Structures are given as structure tokens and as C-alpha cells.
Length: 338
Length: 142
Image (cartoon, rainbow over all chains, first blue to last red; front, top):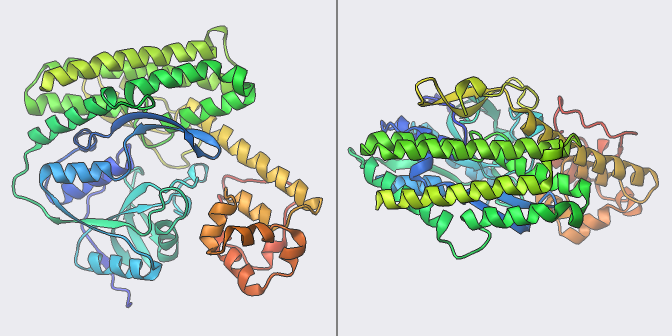
């Protein structure tokens, strides 16, 4: 296909997390002023899950956010925005389809693996396949990319982008791309906020499965306590390090998305005119600070520089405290928006 | 977290910043750029040390003629036989066979090129294995 040059006038706004950032920025392009944290909250993305039977690099999966694709889906549905999605088998066809859409002046979101993205800092290049970026133009064989977790837009060659779109392994993107097809003149943000809050309260408190939500946090606390005995010091410390990475390594805004959610509650307070949400936001911030403390304790164990109070039982106690506080918070939140 | 407490511990982000959500003096949330946080840096380093150790082990086993050089490129690119098989579109058992030095030496060029393409090296380079594990983060995966 002949390379048509095209550069869509697209505003790059940096965000903490890729999917909420992509969602917010695509909407912003069509005149719907939604911040990242609003997208995150409406998308009901706050979560906790500990899945020891799913292994990443041989270590159990701990996650602080809901399933991939959920934010985009819930936000567009909640606001009545029509979205078009495509998946591909053939990488060439996937790239040609992308070219056709950006030719029409439409910015295109897509799922990629991060391992093959050349602009990623080497230290962050792992086989993680649920990254989201926006392509907003091309010149020759170089694509203009708005990757929301970076300060500025970047460029990516066709070869690299193709590889990233067809990364293999868990959560393989299969060239998945999406764009907004129809945006209503008026969106009802308040209703979408309420339903987003309701959904999060449900997953954090009511899922009848012991590894999810507040119960999941307590379950993990119980496990952590026994790790040094069961796994040995070095394996235990690898497990802790892995949790810390899921919680703090780029893309969560700090404390496993707890701070983003607190920011969302502040915005929700203003939009809904409900002052009590401000207080709950403050409590969420305190819980986030506790999670950060957990990371700090844990990393001292990884370095073998643990102080006497940084034991595994002490870490488990912090998590139990987080669980108790989150339990109360989501109950109050659920009552408030009922 | 207060804005003034947003950590600025460089380490893994290169020239980039990440966004931290923090509270300003008026108690309002703002998006604060950060160059990193030491606990996250240390956890990241721990993950790389593990990969580096795996690479060193594989190099030793290649020198001892237990594994083919393919094993080095596989582990260096953080892959196992499952993942590599998907990338080169070969069955797992074939990839596993290619990890044997005797089998690998006799591979057709077309198969070698499939591997070379994924690892961004030439087919000849596939036979080169360094003496030591040198995961240079500044150059990134190749």
C-alpha cells in the first residue's frame, strides 16, 4: 500500500495508566472532557486479585486492576459512545487496515506487547501484552504514537509496530485495534460515575471467590506470613518483589491504583455535588499510603536489609489493615450512592 | 501521598517520567511527574538479576555442550520454548529439539532465519554466544 503521509491534530495528555489514558484521550479528541481518573473510575477498574495458579515468569499473579479492555468497554458503553473494534490474523492486513483508518483522520487505539516497542526504557521491556497506545498518523514507514504513559508523543517504525501488535504469549493482542465511530452530543457523566462506583463496590466486597477483592487481600496476607518457611528466604523475597512490581512499576499512579481512585472520588464529589465523597477520597489516600508502606517493608527484605519490624508477619499485618480499611470504605461508598 | 513527598529516585525510566497521583497544598489531587521510586527500582532490578542468572546458567550449559546456542537467544529474550514456538510458528517439540547442539548444527537456513528474524540478529550470529552474561540494559534486548 502506498504510504500516505498523515498527521492528525491529536492532543497527547500523559497519564499514569495506559488503558485509562487511551480511553480519556480518545474521548477528549472528540470533545468529551474526561480526565484519566474519571475514565478509571467510570471504568470500575479498581480491583484486587491474587491468582497463585497463574504464573508470570514463574511467580504468582497479583493484580490491582480489572481485566484488560474493561475500562474502554465500560466507559464507552456508559457514555453512549460507539466504538469499532477489529482483530486480525495477518500482520500485513492489520497494518493496512490501520493505514486506511488514520487516512480518514481518525486516531486509532490499539493493544500491543511492550517488549518490541523501541521507545520503551530497556529496564521495562518484559513480555507484557496488554499495553494500549494511540496511533495518530504516519510519515513514510514511521508512525506517530501517543503512548499515554510517556511524557511526549513518540515514533515507531512499521516493522516494530507490527511486531508489537502481534506479540505472542499470554494476552496476545492479535493486532487488536479500535476507534470511536459515533460520539453523542451530550453525555451523562454523573450516571456513568454512579454505576462505575457501584460496580467497584460489588467486585471488592461481594464476589463469592476468596482470591478477589477484600477477601483476596486477606488471603494474600495469610500466604505472605508463611512464605519464608514454605519457600525459603530467597524465593519468598522474589514473590514479594513481584507483588511490588505489579503495585508500583509504571502504570498505576502509585499504590496499585489506590491514588488514582482517590483522585476519581474527588472529581466525582464535585460532579455529583456530594461532599461526603471528599472524605472517602481522603480515606482512600490513607489506604494508598499504607500500600506504599507495604512496598517499602517488602523491598527491604528483597535487599536483605530488613529491620526488625520489617518481618513477613509485619507485612501481612499491613495488608490486613488495608483489607479492613478497604472493606469499610467500600461499604460506606456503596451506602452513599445507593 | 503529598506532592512534596512524590519520590524522584531515578533508575529504570531512562529519560522519561511517570505520573504519580499526589495531593497539593489545597488537598486537591494533581498529576505529578516522577523519575521513579526506589522500592520499584529495586523490585525491577531483582527481576533482571533473575533473568541475568538464567542467561549465565544457559551459557555454562552451552559451553558444556548440553544446549545449543539457540537456548542463549531464547533466555536472553525472556522466552521459554512455548513462547518461542509461537513466535517462529513451529511446534514446541521441534523448538525443544533445536535446543540440542547436534540438531541445531544441522538446521536448514530457512529455519535458522525464522529464529534470526525474531531475535533481530543474522542467521550466522545465532551461532555466537558470549563468554559471560552481559545483559546491558542500556542497549536493551536485541
